[in-house]
Length: 286
Image 1 (cartoon, helix red, strand yellow):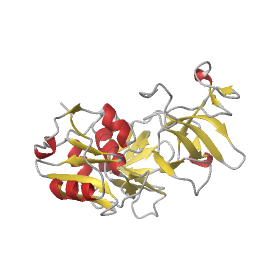
Image 2 (tube, rainbow, N blue to C red):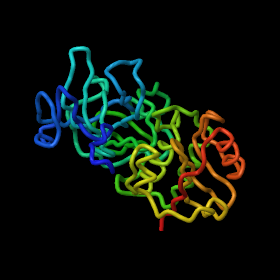
Image 3 (cartoon, rainbow, N blue to C red):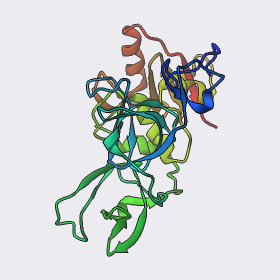
């Protein structure tokens, strides 16, 4: 529930025609249904605003992520809620499957390949993004074998509970990745996707969208804090967020560069101000 007392539709599995059973008595809907737990079986699955390939991409769900599904259409779309950050939307039903063994490892490289057998000379069967989760059942040489029969370079994996220690360095791994609204991989990501992926790699829970992040993350600094930045500070504008690398530089996924870029904070602040937006807050994690 947001500050106005209403439920945020991005995080609430409820529509006028259908809603999650646990929301009965809290929201109005024609019917309430129990959800069915599914797991993402593709490298990534788009989460869209409407059940259409042309609909707005709100976010992405990565391999191994759990999703509670409340409706599946005859056209091959599934409407549900992601377990990780609670986002609600429409996913391709064929990107989901019954839950398998619990993931034991996650992709720690910015991207890796899965092969169909114990040789890197074979044609890859999947390209997996950072944060994808897999269940490893065996090791053969330098390759780890997943429960689904994929062979992944072991050096590109980390135990599921292993965390990076500097989320800014994680963000820097994405330098040059193209800007994509709703994206969260090195094939394309947006400003809040970069923040979420970077913090999540360090074991820090992070909401999906920049307005959610502004409310949830860190402690607000005073009005002139943009001139006294520390590594890891988050700078927020309406609809945008950037990460401070040091006292004068930032990294952010942005539509000006159409990529994840590093630039002087003063230049970004001036450019965004010229476009009509002022900083709304600077947040510092303790």
